[in-house]
Image 1 (cartoon, rainbow, N blue to C red):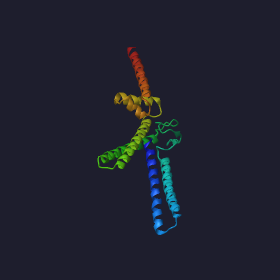
Image 2: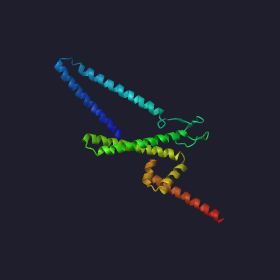
Image 3: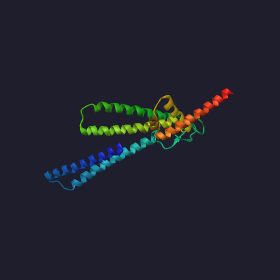
Image 4: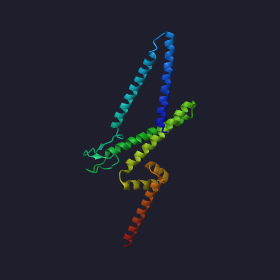
Amino acid sequence: MKPEFKLILRGLLFLAVGLFFLIWGLDDILYLTGGSKELLTIIPVIAFLIFLLIMGTLFAVSIIQKRKHVLYKKIYNCRTCGAVIKLEEIICAKCGAENTIRDEALEKLEYLERKIEVKRSENLKSSKLLKTRRSGKLQEIDDELLSSKARKVRLKKTQLIIGNTHEGKLEWIKTQYYDLGRTIQDVANDLGESMITVRKNLDEIESKDISKNEIDGHQEGS
């Protein structure tokens, strides 16, 4: 189960328990004061409606913010000619201008990476302090959420760095594997692909390099 769903289920469980104790407490108060039993249904319903209103407002605000955020838009337009453009495109296919929206998105992703690392560092410090079993469990869920966010951010960042061409992807893999010495598994994780796919890409890179060397050797010999 995803950590997001765990938090939602946990929140709903606490909400149900809270409503149970609210009704229980109201029942005792009404018994002592001789109040109307109808309040047992009216007050919890009002409280629940207020809760739904608050949650609905927060949800609407989050949707509006996402639509304005460069990373969550569904349609992008070139800032030079206005043509529809993909976020991962390095240049506009219509006018040839640089896709500055992509650069802005990369900056946002790098900012998110820094925030995640700061949060991880804070969690690591707090994990060394004395805590209850419940707080420890909540921190485990928070760590899972951070790991999930980090993977998504890294994947999106890699897609933007590579661009939307196969040659760009091969060049990135070549740099990561041969120049930086990263493992096939690490490269596959950043791409969101399997190790088999990355291995095939490496075979293609090696094949192209061999062909290029043969051509260069032939030209030098002639």
